[in-house]
Length: 212
Image 1 (cartoon, one colour):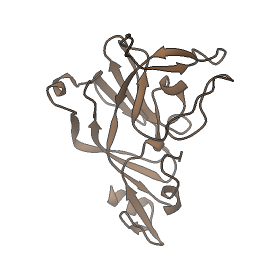
Image 2 (cartoon, rainbow, N blue to C red; image 1 turned 90 degrees about the vertical axis):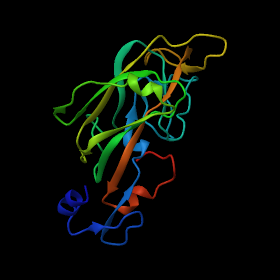
Image 3 (cartoon, helix red, strand yellow; image 1 turned 180 degrees about the vertical axis):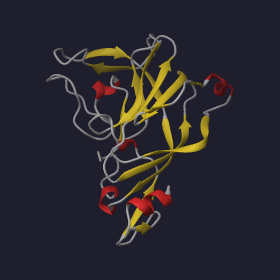
C-alpha cells in the first residue's frame, strides 16, 4: 500500500497519522468514504447530512458510523458501496481492506461477495463465525480499493425482519412519491477493517461524522 502511494502520489512521502507538508497520511477506514445499503435511511450516504423522505416527514441521517438498519430480509442485497458516482471511491483516497468486523450480539449476514472495479470475487459463507462472540474475518491477503475505483459489497440478510412490540422501527419512505411510514428494521454493524491513505491532508481534517 505504501509502495503504491509513493509511486502514484510522488513526490509526496508517507507521513503516517500526522503528515507534514509534502506528505500523505493514513487513518482508519472511514464510513464517510462509502454508502450503506440503498434501503438504509432512505438510501442516503453515511454521514451527518440531510435525510431523505417527503416533507414534512424528512428525517436526519445519523452521524457517520457503520451501523445500518435493514428492513428487507431473506434476500441478496448491497451492504456497502463506494460513495462516488458509479459507486466509486473518492479522489485522493486509497483503501487497504483487510477484512470485516461484525460487533453485534446477533448476526444477520450469512454470506457475502464483493467486486472491486471490474474484478468480481466469489461468495464467502460466514455462518461458522457465529460460534464466536462479535466476530471478525481477516483476509489472507489485503485488497486495495483505489481512488475513483468502484466498490460493491453484497450480502444475504438471513430471515424475516423481527416484528414485535420490542422491535425497532424507523420512518422510511416506500418510494420518492410517498411520505415516510413506520417500518420494522433490524440493526447490523458491518465494519470495514484496514487503513485508508489520503493524499491531501485537508481531506481528513473535517468534523467527525461529516461527509467526505
